[in-house]
Image 1 (cartoon, rainbow, N blue to C red):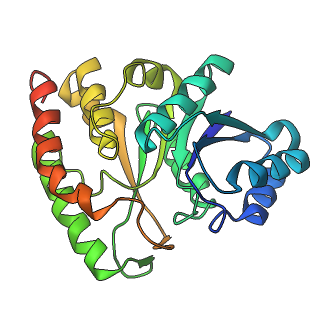
Image 2 (spheres, rainbow, N blue to C red):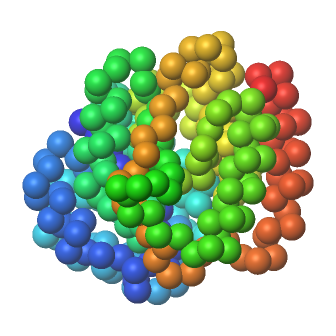
Length: 245
């Protein structure tokens, strides 16, 4: 069983109801938990409409105020863990920049090797794949990814892709505490994974799956005013998790 957390903040213009409903009907072993992160548009109403059609395969958690993606994902994962202890839990971007079909690729990679308990989508531009990113976001992302890989001391290509699946027993260990960063929480999840085990085991546990398709949809939710904070937040993450990194 897989529960996929979908963090949502004002996603009414980007939420593809048809794709979610169709995938849900064809894959009854996957349930969707939408987390409305204090939206001020009709996101909650749209999700409620989907739930009426999909029934128990979809649910909605509403946060009273906007808390940022990190806390929205964490709140959803904790809810999912409280409802089911077996299988996998994960999170996925609401705009479906990563198509839902990629769930099969990530789950296939996890089930193929039992040691893989933290499986991440990776936006590697290569022949045979359709990875469409605006050049500015692509190169800025590569700078962040390189800094993240250096900080973690792991050969990670894409820490920030919003498509990740995690075994529930591991998720219970790494989602318990609030995150330092509202946007770089993926790095903290990886650091916490290293904390729970030795580094060689973490390298066997975490696995990147090159995506076959990914595309930018709309504008980034990260405000320009946040960008100068990224070096500081990387420093904070390094300081807090220095004993494991």
